[in-house]
Length: 275
Image 1 (cartoon, rainbow, N blue to C red):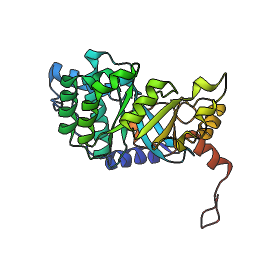
Image 2 (image 1 turned 45 degrees about the vertical axis):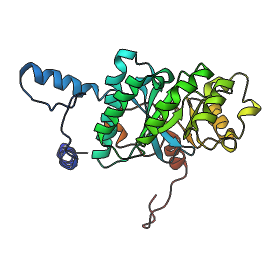
Image 3 (image 1 turned 180 degrees about the vertical axis):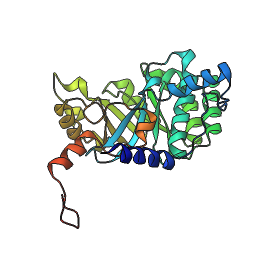
Image 4 (image 1 turned 30 degrees about the vertical axis):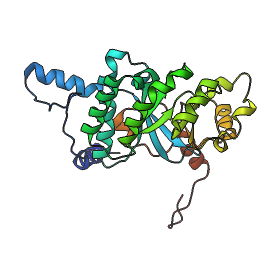
């Protein structure tokens, strides 16, 4: 490619890029002046971090959603700021013309806090996002008795149109209790746990046991993908499918590494007869 044609391609891509006002995590516009400009620019740069894990259908041919990974390890003091950042990421995709649902992880203990639910409700309402784009990925479920204290929080989230997912599902009695009570829209299963001892019978055809979408996570080996098919997963994600990407890269993601590899092995002819 000649330098001239490369410049033309870059200019054309920039011209067609949708306008997006740069804002920080608190919603303030980029002033572009002095030290404030530097702080705003740093905030914008942080949004280009590799934070979003793409989730595909089980064949890897379609991007179905995303997992916002920073919330998995967020401390209590960081959580609301990072939750706001997750909502801002969904808004960025939405304003760019793509409806990409995102799962925002939430420790189960926060569902029992009225103050925390009040804060989440305000953030979700102020985001003005369409119903179905925001999901809560409940994790760190340890005590079966804690479900009673979380019911009101779950109901309030559902009234806002938020979908509920259960992350890191196992066959433990406490989690079965949670599934029966909260009836989540999605159940996530970490596939690495079955590499040594194999897939237990209780996990086979799991899609027929629960009225929920089954998500297979941590797909990094071909064996993980085989196990994901055995449990009847509807969605898969992990390094074998595609590693986490920035929110801008997500805009250009449509299928997984696996789908691209299959397509390269089985090229299709176009109407002109070229491959």
